[in-house]
Length: 173
Image 1 (cartoon, rainbow, N blue to C red):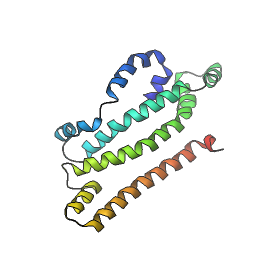
Image 2: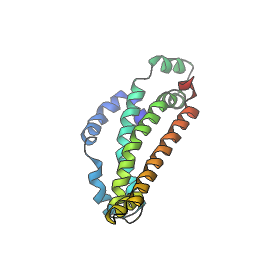
Image 3: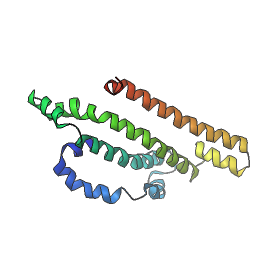
Image 4: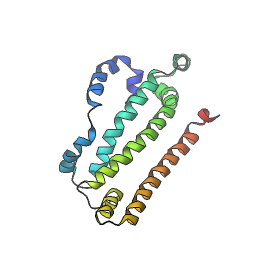
């Protein structure tokens, strides 16, 4: 969606006010609604985290597509490329480093929301484990949970870095 909006300024001009209006709303306030509609479980957590991270990736990707050098687009278009080819060979590869950067930035937010979601109306997950250990004054388990959550974020961050090195070779030349 970000690439589409960045490639089509006239559509972006119509959609942008809705993005600007809804982006500042703290999406975490929708957690009780998701819990009611989707139940206490993984689906409500996934939907909440996806909604929160969606905006970060959307805005970053849209801006990357907007700022793509026009020469790239013109040169591929002059070779007879259609809209699909432009997306596949110009816009997506050109925006991929920014998309991966927004994923790295959103990872911290996602981990914080995961912790919050797991401490609210659930009895499983690392967030619940940390808070349950705290309430039982079992500080060793609490710190073990904190370390586990930190390691999970670290491993995911490293995975995104490795994805960038493999998928965006031209950035690291």
